Image (tube, rainbow, N blue to C red; front, side, top):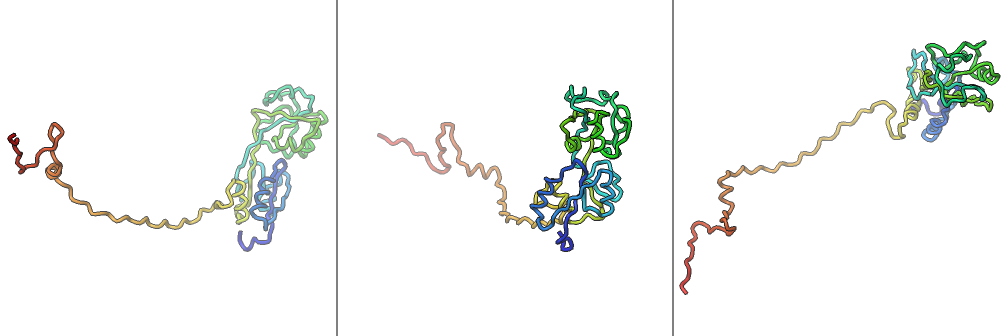
Length: 257
């Protein structure tokens, strides 16, 4: 953290369905002198908020326009279908897009799932928000496909959900303005990536040159001895295992009795 950042707050935006608490808790432990200001923002407005300087970083749903922004994909969510509890879909543990072909499906303006071809039949209206669409599902006028976290966020006793196995999935990312990658942003990136408090923040520090290893003194090597010399030094042995008599020593005869 630089001196210019001392005394300020870290502004963290997040879109519906994202729960930043676990990362904020780590931040509070590591950087207690820089409080976090959480900024809730609709999914469609997250990019504009970051570009306008309304937050230092934020959790957004991909895809986004990355012009001027950096982003780190974090995780992917299962897409589920929200239906009334007495809907026929609830008879199965999971469904496919084909199973919803005859259903009227709401497509809210803030939809966070990127579809190539939308499933089912178009509903009679296009709600402004996912929350509005959930109300219409509860009224029994259609169904809704959303990321799992949004289904949990808009939980109601009269509604339930089932995974849609072959539906596109929503990916959550941490994004921030590339030109405003401050030390605080780097600190938060490290937390999101699971770095420990003592690890680097992503910038590769210049490693000091390793000291030269001390060279052990080399003992002078004795010249190799010729095979003949080695053989002469080694005492010969007889076949019986008894030591041979050295040359020059006379063998004593048997003493007369």
